[in-house]
Image 1 (cartoon, rainbow, N blue to C red):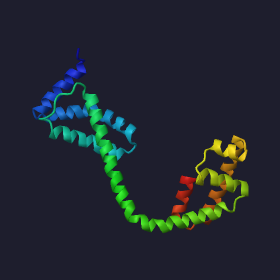
Image 2: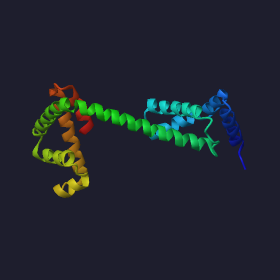
Image 3: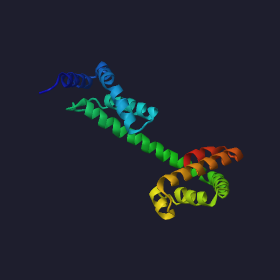
Image 4: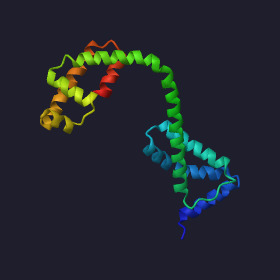
Length: 189
């Protein structure tokens, strides 16, 4: 048995197939907010989601004569907007990768300078903090692994890492001539 919503949706789709722009507007009015909310659960980028929703309704309009009336408008539109969002994200990633490749050589020298400055700062820490920072951020070990290796209790280990990171932030931000260094600190430390 069809619900009143599916009957009205079927009518909107049928009118859409007959070149009724108001039917497209009706589908948009009914589902756009839901599609935007759903899209944001896939990728939290309002511009990408808005573009995908708009692109979806443009595609619906341009292919209206070939479309079959879906059993569930909501499911059909959600699946379609999901595909478009993933396509946009993939295209943007490819573009970002191309831009990144071009600037890799320029960034390499800058990254090396940042690594050198950070490593020098780590070397000013007490030996125990140096060891723990090395294990956590360079070796990417978990707190449990570091605790087992060093024999430090879990909470003492977390406190020690916290103190070391605070010391590094203070030291590096006080002496930083490199603008990206602060971003690096708050991203990796």
